[in-house]
Amino acid sequence: MSSNASTTAPPSWQTTDWRKSALCADEAATRLFFPVGVTGAAEVQIQDAKTVCEGCPVVAECLSFAIETNQEYGIWGGKSEEERRVIRRAWRAERRAQRAALKAS
Image (cartoon, rainbow, N blue to C red; front, top):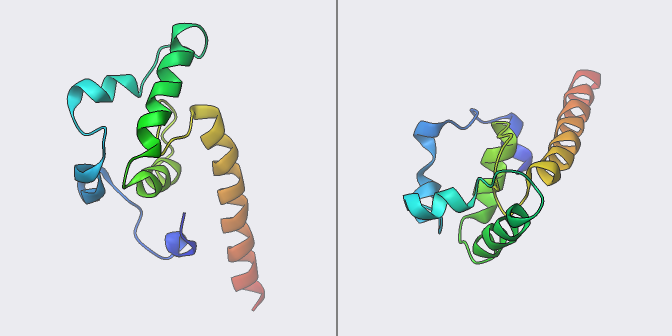
């Protein structure tokens, strides 16, 4: 996430040009990124999706979009649902601190 995230308009599905460059852009690949569950066969699917993300030219944009739009399910930006929850908490805390600093100045 960029530090500008709080000063720019929130992303939307209509303004996601980066998705055209994503390695998961075709429909068949997209299914890989939404495993059912987190154990057994889903563990393999999650790792396979993350492997695709490792080589993706827009992995950072994807993760930022997922965090900023609160995508709860699937693999986004090479991160699982739980990994994004941790990142999102830190991102929100940073945004709160920035707003508090602005009010104090």
